[in-house]
Image (tube, rainbow, N blue to C red):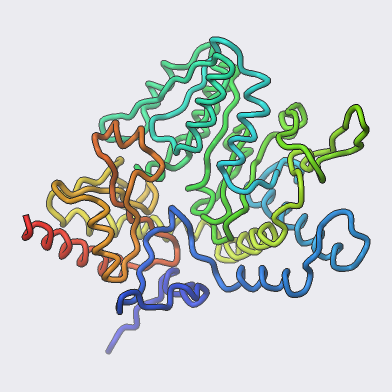
Length: 419
């Protein structure tokens, strides 16, 4: 009697992602670069195409049918985002081009107004450049000082070190929820609670968590949270900022122009209500609508199911990688159930450049990333110029992990034999 193996989530959803069904250099594509940008299901692509074929018009001010349909879909997507992260109201969701723009929005509006000489900003050493550079610029302009949360010996965030940095001078804590290099999941609710006790505001970079696990901004308690659509099955060019309504209302506009105004006179202007105060100019209408479709798709699967399946992939990935000698994987290890970190592994092999590894693996149809992953300070701390990174999503499978590990071993053996 032959037992038929039950299909995993990855097996079931692959039919929805047309890009995955192709060969690269004569080999079936294995896409392990979702931390950089996820692939898009057909449902999202169809939604984007439908907007441009059926509803293409500018939003909000049109009196005609196309404009009304576009506006309904555009603003409907905002409602979907608010529910997806459990915001208290739709006015707390601001469309941006990406998470980087969202962080800059907070930096240049709240930061320039509220930070002064000697005030302290706390970041972690694992931050993406998008959560470092804006604060460096603001610190230079205001005289604020940046302090850095260090790592523990197992390369996770040192919470005790964070506690030691907090003081009455702390005005802002801005940290990543899930590191795109170390893969570790930071205790953002605890970080927020401790920061608020000192009267500091908290911003969470959730680019690597919103696509992979249920997120509840009210449970976290953060003041702002940012994410990018292209990492969560939507298109590029769209992201969002969540902010507590009272805080957003107190912040001045970021950009000036159309859409964000109330009344414009020759000598002054007044600004629109939330969230439009922060959305100058014609927005990325189709992209926002597609983001709404991506959220529909993720919700249909269920974020709990996605998170649980990715934990299984994580456990399996690390079990397989542990069979490879001398492989240096960065970040704390997951537990036996794959919990405690994301389904990604940044790694190095002594004597082999990460880019060489990635290039040869591409010739076998396997897409991984190499470089500093926009975390140069972290790589310097780890004494590495860069690393190779395999990052998975719910459309990946154990079979792909098996193939990846075999090819990785063969690639390492090839370089070793050439030494």
